[in-house]
Image (cartoon, rainbow, N blue to C red; front, side, top):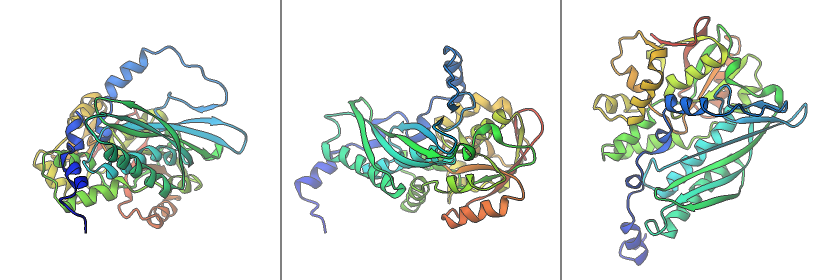
Length: 357
């Protein structure tokens, strides 16, 4: 049993809440998609070498560089400010979220580099070390080392990873490859942003926190297994832009529309009740302002907009697959421990819009 009167315990008590040090947490920190799009449109045309299989053109989860006929290098980076107050949990969540982008391309991670910005003098060395240990433990579960990194003295705490992965060029799964008639399968329940809003306002109980931590530290290991299935055409992960934002990325990439069934979308336990109580993130509203004109909400659920724009941190994979591939897709998800995985909609011909029914 720990000594609650020890100097170490006193120092721990003196540390501020991590979430109090940031203006936003997790993937809710992302620049709104409309603002980001405006910024990117102002950039000079990118150099596109023939080896660059995937760049920024289709809003995919990572860049992909062809090394040979059988190997492609996958590179991504992701970092954010605290979504929880426990340092090790924050590190584990941030690392899980960063690694997910490699899995979402249908590849396997090889190594990571840490990205660290901490308010030195506000957080002590042990708190910062605990954040890094949490990230290292998540990487260990993924079977990869943290092989280096970079750190700065920052006003707000920031942690994340740059991750390198490897995949077969023919099994890389891009947003543009969804096909008409494909079914859409979502791997995790929604609601992480709502949980985080409740946490900041001291409205999330221990059970809710446990559900949040389980969801945000579950590695999206089905990704490379799904990419090996004929009939799996596109994979992305649902993160800061919410379900609707990332579904729209599939639509724009493939030049197709999508229909989602509101009553089929899985939610994490207690999320609906928290949303009904108004526990929402500011990012949810920013998401809707950015892409709401491309969405038709034709369902009776009054919470649909709030739930489906909710920013997810380390959210689930969104898979576009043929009906013939569906049984195998669900089998892979179940075998990897994703009990919430379910069909939520379908891709169809038409303008790149999302309709919720």
